Length: 99
Image (cartoon, rainbow, N blue to C red; front, side, top):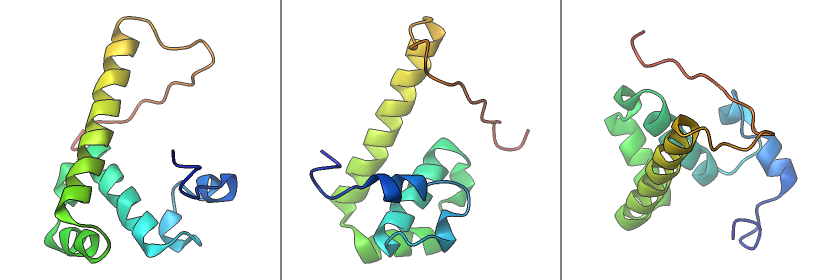
């Protein structure tokens, strides 16, 4: 679906640390910041980030993105816990905020 909506491999390579200085669109950067906040440190959900998100997305779109990230994150944790992750999938340990 993302490819149908215009996502390219060049854009994907820019989704990494330092993406704020990349050539991605401001709406893409805001969406990635939301994702970082959900999977990383929820304290990053500042009024400034909320305002930035609303510059590019409706409340319904923000909720949809948030639920999508949350569902993906929870499903991946369940699969890993059950030992069902694909052999070729790399594992990354993300520290809990404050630890």
